[in-house]
Image (tube, rainbow, N blue to C red; front, side, top):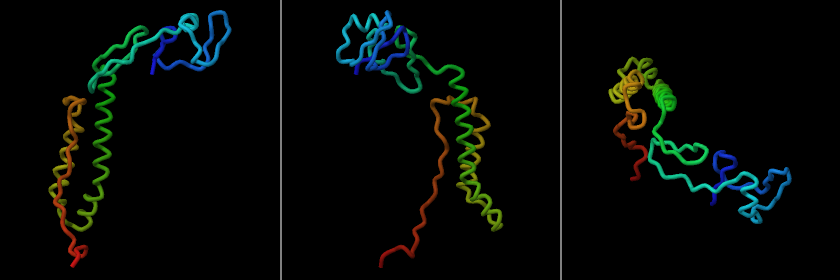
Length: 150
């Protein structure tokens, strides 16, 4: 797939209709000549380079640029991590409520998991937001004897 930039704009595939500098147009991209494209302001562009997470690929109007995330993107990532911690805590609230209603202690696995989420939430600005992992719940599966075949 060939990419083109129109007057320095972000590269994309050619449209089926181009407009020339004199205001006339031509349709059917399979018939466009190099001269047609130049007259309409289109220049061919190489495919974007490869990058690795968390690098970003930008277009500066003439070239592809591979860069690291900026401060704004990093702040957005930290905010996403905090929201995800809140969501995961919310998903386990029912365990806390049920234990409270039954006057039973909460399973230590959930206590630890929820504390790790709160610790992550409270220290999110001190971690590399592009290289971390959320805590996970590790529970032992208890086999239900009623579902065993005899």
